[in-house]
Length: 212
Image (cartoon, rainbow, N blue to C red; front, side, top):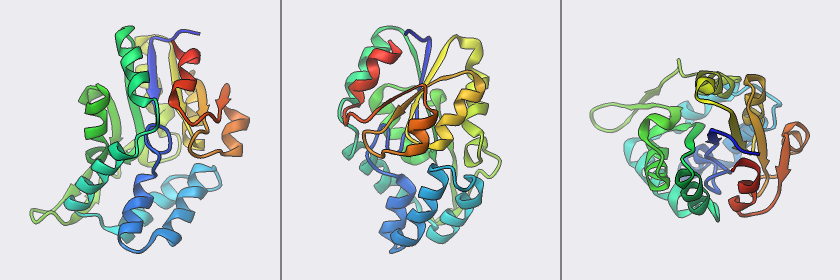
């Protein structure tokens, strides 16, 4: 199948990490907060039930976000760069849609050739000294159904496919996206069940035949 607009999740799809969990690990809260991430990604609780709770516990400062930005790139999923190069060479409109933190994902997006206005993520705010102040609580991507909202806004650009690993990615089907479940990092039963097609290959190159 061929699509005009190709969207990707970030955490456990473009990079092998879950960014919030890595920030939690950095401050000694990994075990407690990773359970919340799993509950949201498996669709057991809505994303908004854990989003603010995790960030308020971690309170990531600017240095932490810069550290995470490097980690996203260091832990990039095999084949991700090649997939983006192929799609961009075909003239596809490529977007990243993530419930992660925009400032941490932006360097990865740039590395993959995604323009800033085609990265859809949640802004984080800092005080003048770089300490944590808060996040964009109005962002649809900090809530359940947010990816469907973003996909709906992109529908005027043509047919849409989305690649992701979690329950929040499957919500894009509600907005008419063809959804490819990527289980190469995290193999989730709910995604196997709901995705239009599913792969557990560790390389992102496995999704290319479905989207180009």
